[in-house]
Length: 78
Picture 1 (tube, rainbow, N blue to C red):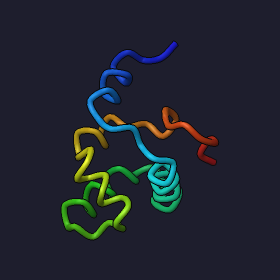
Picture 2: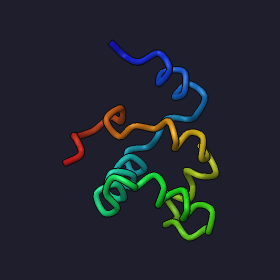
Picture 3: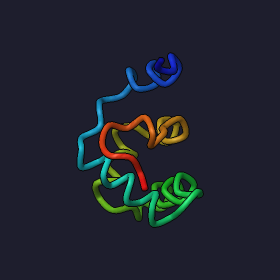
């Protein structure tokens, strides 16, 4: 069964494109368990790669905090 809180969070934002999901997965693999904090810091410095920086503009830090890679469509991370 799907987490209702996650479903509500996703409903507030446009769906991710496959390229965005893949970019998030690759970023998470490169940065390990602190990937969200690293990405947030890059967003604040405006230094994230363009595809990921676009997520800051369209989805923002609140979305990132609640986002889970496991919830993303596509092959499992790992």
